[in-house]
Length: 292
Image (cartoon, rainbow, N blue to C red; front, top):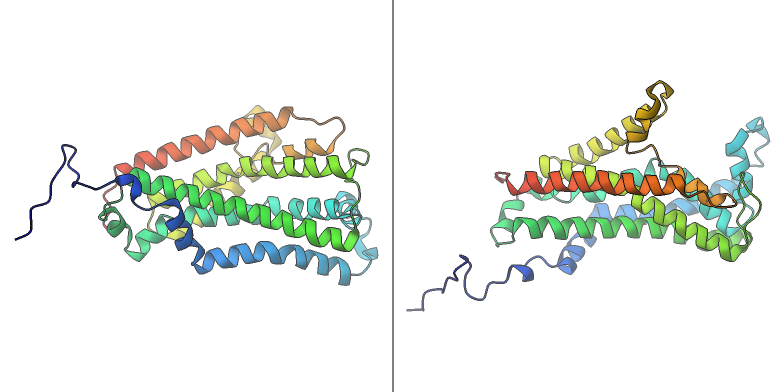
């Protein structure tokens, strides 16, 4: 007969280490093998190519009737790799990046529940807090990777096609290419922080529902609703409390000198909202009766 398992004072079997369960890299590989991850990252590479093709085969834009500010941005986009990258980020930030981050963070726990595998992970046993932490970190890492792939691809093909030129904008004089690259990195950093709001909201919905589409779609719809409310000037100072109010504060990096006040407020707002959403997610999941 085999010897009975030794149980420690904390209730765990002898030799069991909770920190060795569900490692970051094992979860990274699991998510990398999923079709939605491959498609999302693939589209981050494809989008700059689509934008470039549109510029190449879309005509000279004479039918735009002036086009206003957006037309000016299009003209600047073809004046150098940095400007092409900035334009690609500009057209992606308000919706595409929101969807991608919501997809990675809203699908991660809800998909396990919908497949019926969540309870088996917890029975492994993987501590609930560790499961949430690893899944959140992997989702955030893939979200950051998607942002970097979008910007990196745009910078590469934009530079190859339009050359390495100073960064231009409609609100300031040209910025030397070296400094322009640093400001572009600053834009990416601010966007990454701002998207924490989407990540937090999507992750909260992911632990609250067994439907991945509901978690992803709910996060996107709530962000869109916040953006719509932010356009209603009658709300006055209440708009400052909306999580999307400072979404465009990164434009301050394009001015001379840099306008950083709104960016600081936006970063603080994003971190606070994300922290609240993640705290609620932990509180909900640690008390949730997992049956699927």
